[in-house]
Length: 501
Image (cartoon, rainbow, N blue to C red; front, side):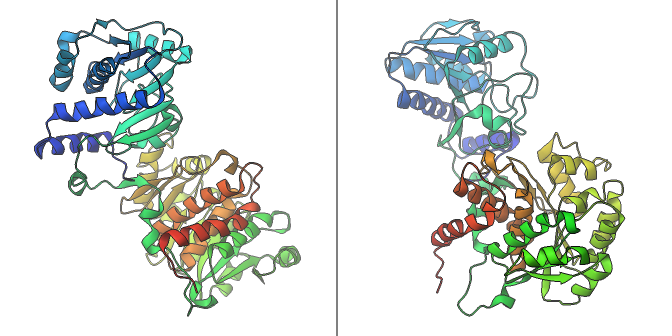
């Protein structure tokens, strides 16, 4: 159940379910029952329940939940935004089945109440205002335990954005599949704990919808994950080259190199300027160090075709030399992870890089910007939306550049040029620390070096990165991450049923 459905795709799932024999009112009854069950699972009948219902199908779910909770002995107070006579379809039917009183929108919430938020669903496209905004404020200020129906009112189902104002829920009950708004920030925070209820939509509808977006879970890439073989050797597991910066900025490259090695690359080499050779050599044991000055030095090392993956950017410096080095790598038809300085160096001339990539289709580029770097390199490209529209922007950037794009953050988004996308939600807050992104670049490169395709390697790398951070826990620093991969790999291999001998 890792597919993510846009609001349009969810509407199509509802429509197809009805076409295949499930009446829409039955779907609504099942949704309302799931919400009532969520209230009943945590709270006895002694606490009053206030159901805030809207004028659409979300409100219809609220009417069902109110009726069922009343039948179970709860004291229910239902408040409706708008005129009950104007309800249509399933919502009108649900309202007729509810025999209790219906009051106007509420401005105060009594202490100790449970609030069922059935005001607006995931399809909200305008800002919350008027009576609804007053109710949202009252609910948020009350400290009440809020159970949201489908999505907290005021959260955009496709983007996770707050539409003017939004309810902060303790838990959210959604139906069939999550939507992007459940996992993208800030929507994920407003949802609280999200559970998915089965309301009778058959999973076969996904064959018609064909969603391209999913949660980043091992099920999306495990079939391509590299597993060590008894007959394997270091050369069969690939060779990653990490381009280092000068003497004062070698740490980033060393973190990337360690990440690639722990991720399973058979060999890892740091390409080091002469002034940093001693530092890089003294700081590494299993990682090799070779002298390489600028683009010419890199080309000399890449004459060894066994080097199949290159990391450029971490601590590498910004400017013409970095641009020349990246362009040299592109022409050598390797898999490249372009991060940090390698991206910022093209901030004024992004088309230079993307034109070169298109001229060398045998090269595979994985771009790993955070939001600031994304803005610097893509803001000049008219076909790519602002990074504030992060889902659409990442997808457009991948399509326009022909590259895998990883927009890093607490809700990292990864898109492939063919339109497939995943969103990660397993990054703990203490992962926001200096050097963590350098390790991530290394993990992705290490997977690519072993033959994992770029999109899947990026998704797997981001997931492993988050799991490693959780393994370390609070107090994490970037140096901890490569070492924490060991228990994560052990669990993953066990789940994959891998035979390691």
